[in-house]
Amino acid sequence: MLSILSVPVILAGGYCYYKFNKKKVVEKALDMYASIVVYSKDKFNFTIDDMFSCNHVNLIHYYNGERKEEAIKSYFDDAEKHYKVINFEDILNQYEIKYDDHFRILFSYNYDNKDYFHYLNNYQILSLVNGDDEVDVLNTYPIMDKNKFEMFKNNKLNNYFNEEEHINDSFYILLNGDLKHLETVKLFNKETDEYEVDTDDKLKELFNKLKGPFNDWGLLSLNVIRNRWIFDDFNIDKKYKIIIKQGLYLNENTFDLESDIIEIEYNEDFIKLPTLYKLFQKKLKNNSLKLKNN
Image 1 (cartoon, rainbow, N blue to C red):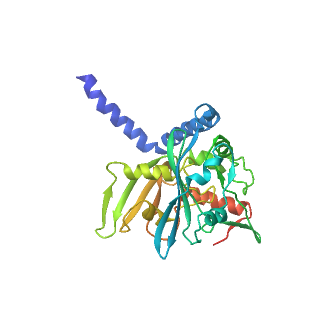
Image 2 (cartoon, rainbow, N blue to C red):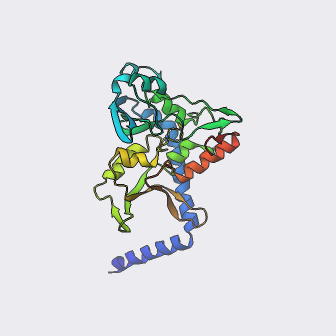
Image 3 (cartoon, rainbow, N blue to C red):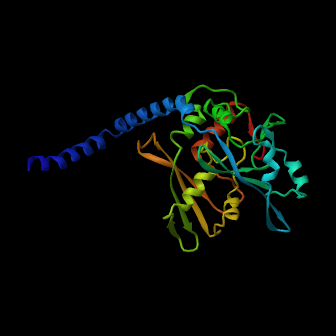
């Protein structure tokens, strides 16, 4: 009987210790987690399957206000074994398509035995300027390979940012630690003011593909995703607001574990992961860069 009674006493004691020493407990746990992440960074060479395969490529555009979609995977078939710089003007000419503000290419591919989506646009949404000069960033195919992942690991994916060694400024550590996983995806019905839970995880599966292998929603390559494309390309009703919780990190003020919240509605904005976008803007300032459209 004594041993049975001791269980709730021990649990209560543990709870009280956590309650009054929350900062110490959480910091200890996060220190251990950070050590694992940094250790894993050096070991990724042994765990990443660098095989890339393209499932399909669709060119999406609008004609007289009507959405059109063309399968163009054959355009990239000769580039499976080597890099190919993607030329938007050449693609438009080859498929006899007139440019519009929402012209985009949607790739579906597999890397490291996981399926992903990747959007390409022609930098009209997000482009950078250094003084009076626009920063030139090339898109290459294959979309992902071992070389690109290694560059990401070493914080060199972005040739428009100077190399920064401080761990707090590492995109890799942030995106493969605090912000790696999607916690929840919900729909908020704006007509009924009710939430709808993703019970079968179909939405979570979709957005895991869209955030990509870097977990950055295309920000690091400047190929961000317009909010309205999600609704148009994946048949989501415009009456919904999509609410995503991503990552788990320590709030330095409350010492509670929290997630970044992404809210997506049918509009012209693009998907922003708050903590990542804040670091991105910090690096822009440190490197004397500005967003062209801001």
